[in-house]
Amino acid sequence: MGYRDEKLSEEKVFKDPVHRYVHVRDRVIWDLIGTSEFQRLRRIKQLGTSYLTFHGAEHSRFNHSLGVYEIVRRIIENFKDRPNWDDDERLLCLCAALLHDLGHGPFSHSFEKVFKLDHEDYTQKILLGDTEVNKILTQVEEGFPKKVADVINKTYANKLVVSLISSQIDADRMDYLQRDAYFTGVSYGHFDMERILRVMRPMEDQVVVKESGMHAVEDYIMSRYQMYWQVYFHPVTRSAEVILSKILHRAKELYESGYTFKLKPTHFFSFFAGQPTLKEYLALDEAVTLYYFQTWMEEDDPVLSDLCDRFVNRKLFKYIEFNPNSQMNQWMELYKLFSKAGLNPDYYLVVDSSSDLPYDFYRPGEEEERLPIHLLQPSQELRELSRLSDIVEAISGKKRTDHKLYIPLDRLEEMSNRSKTKKRIMEILYG
Image 1 (tube, helix red, strand yellow):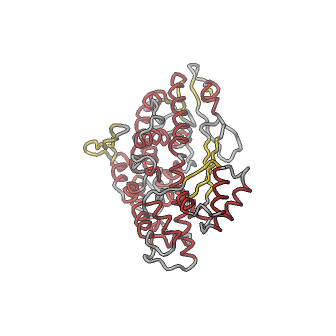
Image 2 (cartoon, helix red, strand yellow):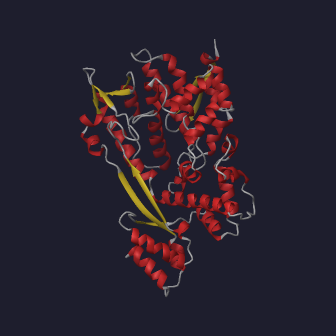
Image 3 (cartoon, rainbow, N blue to C red):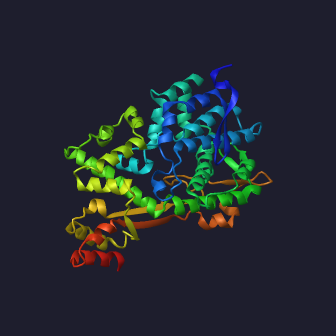
């Protein structure tokens, strides 16, 4: 028996709060979980700064990755011996599910924006580079790491395999919605996943759902919609993200200006220079990042010190509704007033926008072409979900955008009430 087919002498299980158990029988999967690159995901939170809003949201990308693997494992069990399903793709699907988030950095999206990085690029580098993960995948067969990378990158020839991990109803979303709902304690993200898994069917180029499962899919779409606006885009979480981004921007600006840090930020040097190696990228996790934030609280630079204190001790910016498209003149006046008040507006006056498209049907030629969810009729004909569901039709293609202005209200309140600058700032902000 080759390495690809090797089974453990007995099944291993991970106790999981969402799926009850995660089952591992394949030697390849067990070995991948044990790699340093995969274990690093324990030190990257799944929800970034959300733990400052929902105190239970301390779960990691390690948890989530195991969950996605488990959902794909169950889907494949149900697909066995069905038309259009090739069981030779089984291990590839499991590996791609397990490793899909491997390239995430600390506080993922904020971190990526500041340093102009893409976690998907780093996932590819980990899979294809000189890593423990690559060595294990190469043992399966020559070229297997590239296959796994192609599935995650959505370029693999078999689109059915890709759709299990990346589509509008995939294992990734099904896990993070339930997991994030569980750990944040909200009621929005729950839906009947067992029902959806039972009615999923493999077609030539995507997974479809039997029409009898439509209501379970409606629940899933609506739970995603609610989770984005109630959890992922929560304005307090966004406030923490704004401060986090500004800390990293300030540290980079100081480094470029020749500032002497009390503790050299050696882990960040290559990021400031814009060219971290894979080894340097993997060496930076959230524990290391938070260590620097704590030490930077003692820095002589008042902006860096203050921002780090705000993040570490949760003294977040307050926010107001603010539309930059229609209120640009007010923003420009505020910019001047903040400068006059001794508050650097580049760091203390921040417009942040959130937008989401909960579900969309196929629109050829768009920047991100979304493969719609199809329902399988008893006649074996396929119908697009929003054609049959009034609920889904109501939100299809409707992009919702929200704008907030974040400010350090505590600093403004400390200013003298006689100050004309303070008076004018408060007039613009609160009318």
